[in-house]
Length: 267
Length: 270
Image (cartoon, rainbow over all chains, first blue to last red; front, side, top):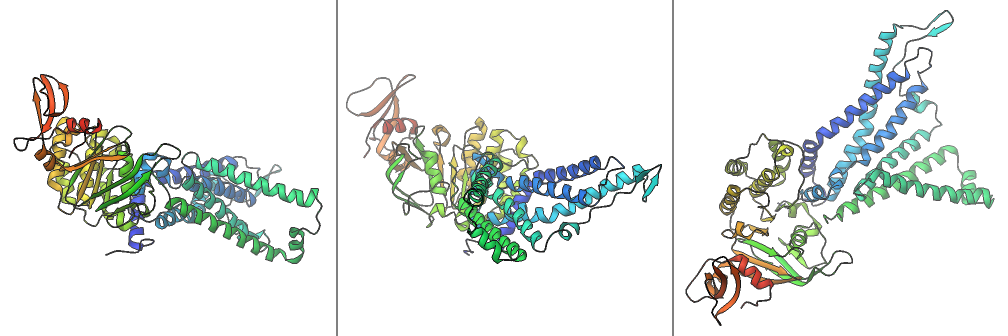
């Protein structure tokens, strides 16, 4: 029986299990490295009893790890395409380009966004447990003018609480876009995909910044489209507009990735 | 099963590799694809399996355009490349991961061929030698029961006993609705295996014929001295000359190496 040639859930399941069996060691290694890095950094940052690490400290570490690990993880998607021989084997697997892309999107971006906070929470909580038990600190106390306090586990409520409404959504979408661009780079370039993509995006951003600098600072265009837009929309509307634009760019990047996969050759 | 019509192909700005190449092949054959280095054997195999893009409507395989790479097409085609990289998993894990894609996969057949090749299912692919991995890939390819099996230099890296086992398992594992395309330089390894010869040279098909036809029309012998007239092609060999003549006394074994040299050096056959 001839099944749908673009997407078939059974075939997708087979591909997911095949990829998992072939790559689970590397995946476990990656997550193990993340766990260790979070634990080690947390312990390093909490080494002094005077430091005010709670609250913002956790969030900074969380976000830094989120972007660095996320970019590394999604930048190494389509790992078979790094070598000519594995590209050939990979392209002969009976799955469609869409199924291949969907799998990598779920594994490298969706799973990362879901798993990273959980792993961060576990690793940082372990670090807190280790530090508090070694420092024998159970409550806030001031002895001889020195304040000691127990460290608290990370609270993700802070991620959103200090931000203007709508800004969190836009920043979240921006991080998804960054991961999608890294994914697109890994489908496009065989060697050093992440670095090449960062250079490409960097050049693109520099051009954009240059354009706005010219518009606002050099030409002093008070009636430029940016100024007009700024006056017409509220901050919330602006964030929603930004989120939509970023999501649209992400969709374009995913479509581009799809066509790169569809036209991939084993030269 | 394979239809190529007026195929033109070149890599980037390089000279044309194939120039209006046309070729058809039906199921039920084991085809030996021969050509000099750089003649385009591997490229032709990649074009047939959809790993390279060909100009529109020039290649049809199993009724489909290979480069569309429809999963339905890929389920019926298995390609064993000359150079490959396999994941660092055990044989059993590889089989579990990949066999599920092929509807006609025969696990018993795989086990039997692995016994013939003396392969241990518990071995880790990354710890196996090049030849052992090649044997495993050939065993896996045959067990998929795909309609089109494409083997690029399958005997490279195989030891002498394994080459004989290779011929035995390939000949014994195929059905009438399958087509096997074997590209090789090691003609002796496949001499008694193939039933059709396809020789490509300078972008064209120089010869496409069954071994039976060739054996009926030509004879291949070794002589002490060359005699004028009847010899179509000859080469110096230990003990005299290897010669190719028009057949006068029934079938003889086809010396594929001699035939290949004759064809690529310009001999036109009837």
